[in-house]
Amino acid sequence: MNPAKALGPAILTFIAYIVFSGSVSGYDLITGAAIAVITGILVSDFLVTDTRKSLDIRRLGWLIAYAFYYLTIAELKSHLSFAPKVLSGRIRPGVVEVRTHLKTEYGMVTLANSITNTPGTATVDIDPEKQVLYVHWLWVESEDREGVREKIAKPFETFIKHIFEGGEQA
Amino acid sequence: MSGVRKVASAVALLAIVAALSLGAAAGGMGPFFDGIRSLGAFYLSTAPPQIAELVLGPSYRGLSSYSPEVVTSIVWDYRGLDTYFETAVFFLAIIGAVAIYRGIEEPVLRRPASGLSPIVRAVTKFLIPINIAVAASIALHGHLTPGGGFQAGAALAVAPIIVIVVFSRRYLLERGVTKLKALFFRSAGLIGIALVVLIPVIWSVISGEWAWVMQNQWKPGAEAFSYPAYLGGALISGSIWFLNLFEFLAVSFGFTILFLLISIDEDTVRSCMIRGGEECDRY
Image (cartoon, rainbow over all chains, first blue to last red; front, side, top):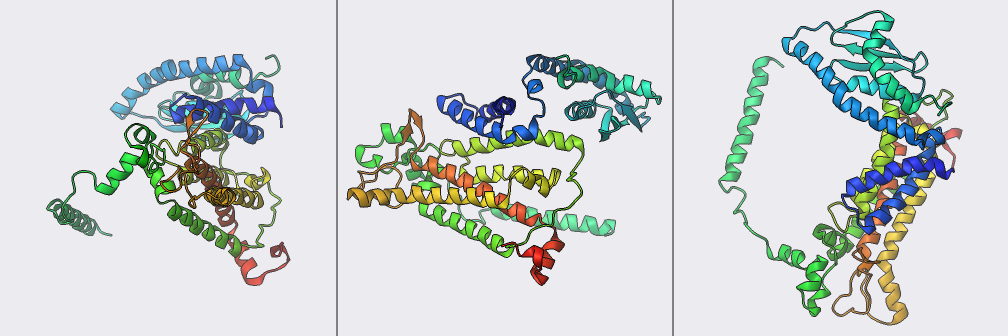
């Protein structure tokens, strides 16, 4: 057991405990901390593979920046572009293969969920070995490999790379 | 089913619902009681500590369980013995399942545990600690807010069943969640409950003063014994806090045992039960 490895999951547990309890009395802080320590130790091997990455404050900064970008700009752009298509009923659907540069499990899953949660695109399946996502697209704009990546994955990939990958120089 | 028949059955169902609602609204279920019945009023006016301390006189304060959550007060204090034996029934059921499945072990397969897609697996990993936090919060606030040990145990039992569905039964076993460990923690929870129930009696034997089985706060006629209502300034409602905690442990691991057992491959179970065989006689 590695205490540093357990720190990330413990903080997540503590936040969940306090938010769910809806109170910050001394009792909640003490019981929350106790539960967080136990849970952190129990799930750290299950959740964390790279301790240094899990405690990197710059990666957390990128995560917050990405959340802000995603929930405001990315969602708005995607809604504006797909709302007219949905309302008019003029769609050109198809499943495309998206090649990604992301390698890690968390990175690829974040990309897959980011694609699914914006209107117009939904990740159907993911192949971690081939680094490929299969995405259902409501309006297939492009069919060549680079065009698809540019349209679907590129806006998210840069952020996700900073959050989960590139451990060497960080 | 043809379209006409579908419409006909929908109309028939709607007619039954409408007739029942009409009957109930017309007073078919007896007169509606508008207000609080005397028994409810008694619990509401004695259980919470604020009322016990400010409103009730010294001679009535001993009727309080010092918990603002009146339902939990009833479940673990006013009718505590009932809950104690309910818990016993639930655990006899689990012991029954363990006895039926005794000696049945799934052969270890050579192929790796795969489970659902990487997306589901990665997201599930993050849900596990959040699940534990929520369940623990329900248990540790059982004396303050709706919930308590049993509900928290059921909430925590979501974690093993999700891991079994999303990953596999073997994945759970490989991470150390085994039947033996679950039995150990379940038994620890049960022993904890029994101890909390019997401590007043043990104390009574030692001190020679009167105390009741499963007594929480001091009672008229048994004033000498009382579980602490506060611990370091925080309200813990005496025995209720401990009972919730141990019930949480016992129920969550009780369910974990059941999930581990019922997720064994059906053919393995059947062949072990009918034919026995070497791989089925581990114990």
